[in-house]
Length: 56
Image (cartoon, rainbow, N blue to C red; front, top):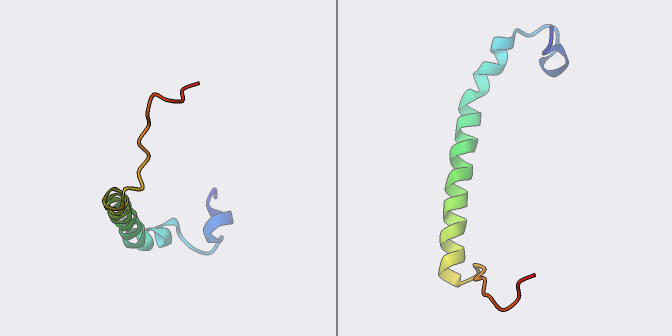
């Protein structure tokens, strides 16, 4: 089968589906971390503010 190299020949594909909560939690965590980093960057003024001085 196509997934034999990934999950092994003795495991069904449904075995991988047991880990969907980890995938969902990782996705939610990355969204939360991105939001938090954006807020911190804006608060401390470390966001790039482009100007018209140097344009190539």
